[in-house]
Image (cartoon, rainbow, N blue to C red; front, side, top):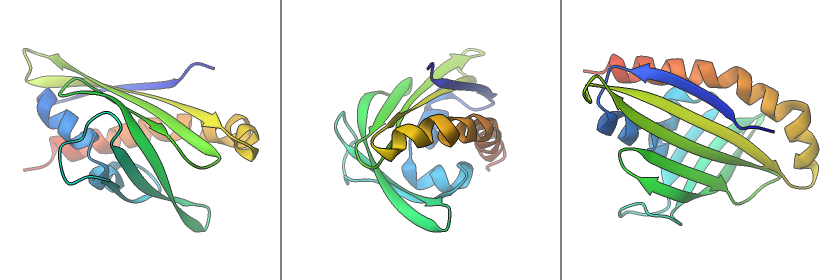
Length: 148
């Protein structure tokens, strides 16, 4: 199946959008069911750096680890899940518009199921993500455009 692709335009420069959207400690501000997040490094993130996000799944909280697959600030960033039965594959692209005063943000999201995850991805996970992504991007856009 093709990845779930969602795009929005944000009235902020690409550097600001990229920094915000790729900071796991900010995911809780715009992604539904995220409880916390952090990079597993104190230094500069590079390919291979781990990103740990804790999500509320049902009545439980579960930490999931992803690894950066590509990074080219302020344009592209991607991660791939490395643990659990459902592993997200995320690609972020930030394009400058209006001479760099605004940005077009595209997030492509796909899933890889392992074990029972194969069934869950096809039955529920993709549908839920497809429904949540527009809401998540609206929250991200509102957050970025309305900060002081």
